[in-house]
Length: 565
Picture 1 (cartoon, rainbow, N blue to C red):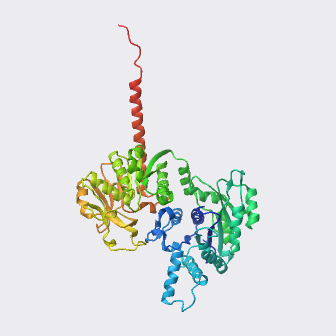
Picture 2: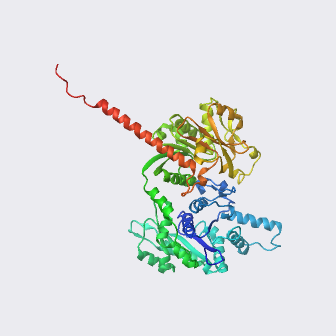
Picture 3: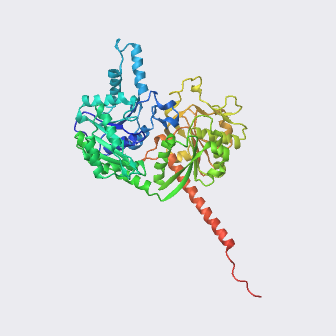
């Protein structure tokens, strides 16, 4: 434990370009400190004016990560939860929109007693109070790691940077640490790395009163010690504190890279924390299995955001986690649902070992998803549907097994004879989009003897939701008569949470988002079993191919010389 009663604060900033990996760096540092026995809280400070990312287009912001309490947050909170192995809440994500909304509400109430409301002190004080709140409520953490969204130099980030500058003055040098993530690009025409972008990024930070205590240099491959010394000289950061963060084959290797450069020890030395070495044996074992799989499987993801992988970040990571117990590598095949509609599913799905249909909103691409589900159902290929993916599975089953002509979802067509998917009762009359869906963790009661019950090993589970529509209870009986199993329902039996097909190798649809609760150290049971089903399907395909090859060989093999009569 820390040798002081005061919480320590680490502030992570980024420079030169966006998407360098501040979230993964923050999560990695948090993991290393946690494995040393310290309690850690991560917080993301996002400079955009949206209250949260819930109404943003995934092409602009990537995945919306939903917490147990229903908060719609930045995808970096997914990294925090996965690396730290803990659930976070609304305090762990702060946006400019939230800050301004709070301040304007207070001003309208007269809380500021007629004072002129300004960025300094009102905005900065509110930002600081949100950061400090993590150290006040509940069990006091030893370390709070605050990631500042955006890039140094962005005008919208200035209030956050000013706030952390003030926090250093108020909390003290020994209780605060500035970590700056920056790019050291390799210029192929010159055949060398360039440090100027890093120098200029640090210069911008220093102009607003922030001197980094540590640099994390993102690069395509490791840089030399002489280059680190050069960066140290021009940026006034000790050479020991200039760490290298080269591209890695898996993000879960990054904590090990940082530990090999003593990043966690440097942090502990800065804060004068007397703690033991981190226990990384389990983490090293996970990384070893990820990097050295014994087998490979192909799983298709059919959606409409396939050109932006960040829209499915948690799903991608869940497959990585699930592949570890299977000792397999999951090769994800990205298939546009619109291309399925135009070219048919056979072209894209004939050689896959599994199909996943993720969540989403809007009519575009839905018919392609339905066609792809029909194909894998009829060809006994493992299937996993999540949220809209489950709803599309219900629509396909109603049309092609129950013979309910033109079955569809009320989300896409209001004038429907057979809306097998309908608006939830408590969503009727809702006009505002942000934060009004069924959000957060809800209980689900499983049906004994089903695949999902076997996967979880318990009768009641809790999963996170983000949706407005549900399976229409008016069609439960007809679907059940045609052997679609209602494998999970809400405790009051009002909402169907899981559907399955019994006479299929693995066909499961869930209304919730299991990917949000998967961890490297604890893969989600449904992803784990889905990947195992894909491994089995791959084995069956190989065996069938071998048998076919043997038969072909026997048919073409010479029968020997003709005997004379």
